[in-house]
Image 1 (cartoon, rainbow, N blue to C red):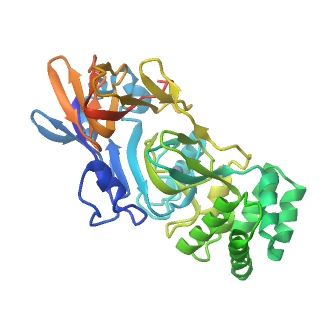
Image 2 (image 1 turned 90 degrees about the vertical axis):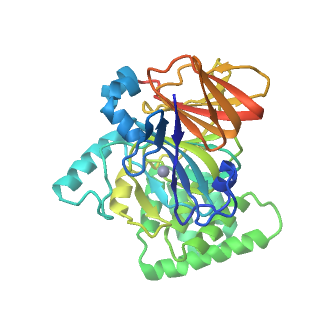
Image 3 (image 1 turned 30 degrees about the horizontal axis):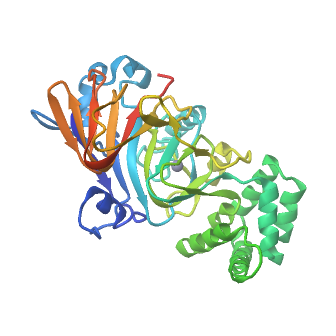
Length: 406
Ligand SMILES: [Zn+2]
C-alpha cells in the first residue's frame, strides 16, 4: 500500500469552500475547486508516494499491470478501469448523458473515420468505453436524473398555468410514454430561437407565480430549479428540458447511479463519485461546451424511471456497499468508530481507499500509513491483510475496487 495524492481540478462550477474545508485547507480557496481525482486517468493521474520517490499511478500501473491490478489486468487492457473523485459542485453542471459500450465503440470509430482530432472540442467520443457513474452524497446533494413519469410531468405543467405551454402539455398527455417524451424533448431541444424566446420566459414567469402562490406546493423544488438554471444559463433550451427530469435530493450516504442513456445534471453538493475511465459525454445544454443534439438523441433512454437512488446495503464485513451493474468498479463505505480496534479491509486491492472524515491508520504487516480527510492510499493486487483503525474520533473510508464482473 502507498499514499495516494489526488489531482485537484479547478472548474468554474466548483466550490471555494467545500473541498478546501474537507481537506483541512484555508477557506475560501483561491480558485473554485471542483474535483479531486484519484485514478490513473492520462489527463490528470493521482500520484503515489513510494520509498524511492513520487510517481504517477498511471506510470505505476503501466510498469507492472499484473502486479498492480492482478489477474483482471488483461480484461481492462492493463489499465485501472475506474476513476474515483471527490466532487464539489457550487453551480449546476451541464445536462448530459453517456453512451453504452456499443454506442461508444461505434461513435469512436465513426469520428476516427471522419478524422476529427482526438483533442478537438467538437469530438463526442474520446475513447471506446461506456461511462456508468455512481455518486454518493457526503452532504446534501442535488441533481436531475432520468425522465420523470409523464403523468407527473403533465401535472407539473398544468400547475404552472402557462398558456404558452398548453400545446406541449397536451402533446405529452396524449402520449404519456417514452415515445411522447422523445417527441417533446426533441421538439424543445431544437426549438427555433423566436419560439424559445417566447416560451422560456413564459414558463419562468409561471414558475415565479407558482412559488409565490398559496395552496399545495408539490413542485416547489422543480420550479425553483428551473429558475436557478435559467439564471445560470439564460435563454438555454436545456432549462425546458430539465423540467422533464426527476429532481433528486440525496441525503448524506445515499447514492445515485447513472447508467448509459440516463439524462442527468448535477446541481450542487459534495460527493464521492466513481465512474468507468471514460471521457464520453454527450451534452444537451446548460454549458458553454460542445453540444451535439442529434448524437445525444441517439444515445438517450427516454423510458421514464423512478429516482435512480442507490441505498447502501450491509456487505457483511462491517462496511456498506453501493450495488451497481458496472464491471469496472465497486464502492464500499466503512464508518469507523474510535476504539473499535482494527477493521480488516477485505478485498481492498486492487483499488483505492479514500478517507472522507476523521483520520485513519492503515496497517499491513509491520507497516502503517496515516490517511487524513481528502487523503487516500493505493492498494495493489499484491497487498493483502490491510486493516484500518480510526484515530482521534470517528472516521469514514470509501473503498473503490473492481466490479463484481471482474
Ligand atoms: Zn455524467
